[in-house]
Length: 156
Image (cartoon, rainbow, N blue to C red; front, top):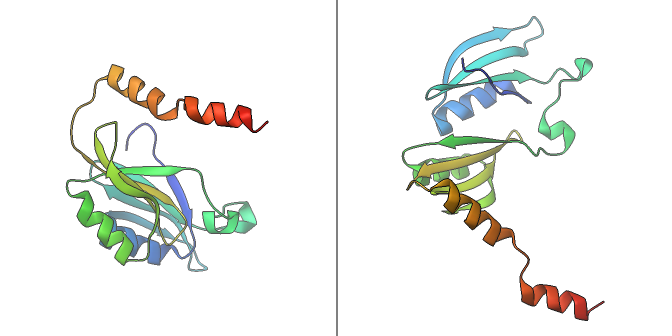
């Protein structure tokens, strides 16, 4: 494992493991069931990275995004053919959060919400972008527009 390993919580861990394997190419490495049938932990490999997964254990405060009503956190998965993985995810029940598009940071990138409430950034590297280009593009993208600022002032 790497220094930091995400640990996600889902409802119906066996179904989630199957979904992540068939749709996102995860490989199950270890499964730890508990007597009541829930999965305390499943180790999934995505390329060279590990994601740990568990069923909900609400009696211990361990709940999924579905119980919480959403999530801010996103997992970022880089693949060789993002358009294919994107379509597989949608066909398997994922919902588009941000459409797949060419991004200023050099990836074909979009975000989906999987059937278990987790957000996935799906990406394919297209080109290298220098740190200076990244900063300039981010500032341009998030800079207030003069016309919009003028219109807001006029409406006050």
